[in-house]
Length: 206
Ligand code: VGL
Ligand code: ZN
Image 1 (cartoon, rainbow, N blue to C red):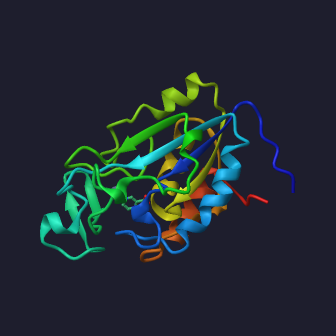
Image 2: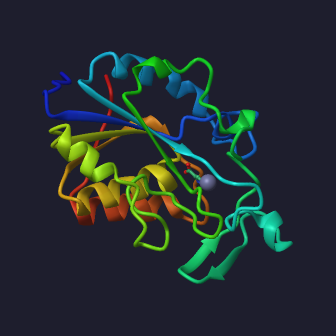
């Protein structure tokens, strides 16, 4: 199956950071296996954007900030929040992109999750569902029409970025073999059901 790429196609590289790769604080199994296909894809796409999870210490999404165990959930002002191990803390090694990733290809980096009290899985709209990152305006100004999503984690940051990309009016393709999932309490099945409902395509990179 050929992978034809148009001038209006953008590649969105989601959270390919040390903490989400093996050895990191919130490691997604097989995360580092994505580096070589993502590097190959970045060389082909006319528009390439990366997202970077970028939390201050003691962020509201950290279990440690609430004296709770990782992967518990709590209610925050904006709704239910999964509590994570401390990860992607600003200025730490864990927040850096994986060193083998060809970051020279990133034309723009969108940081998210930097408000102390608000998490953001999505690269477009934070978890309060009102704070925006500016990514949809950027992509529209660049002339992007169809977005191909790759990276980590398929059932959290990739999924929420896909939902919001669709809501912003883009055509959305999740490149499944260039993503890996956390799969917490059925989260991957939920994501796939939402992709189906919202008209988000799933494809593999050859
Ligand atoms: C992510 C949990 C917390 C992700 C980020 O990149 O999927 N997941 N922060
Ligand atoms: Zn995070």
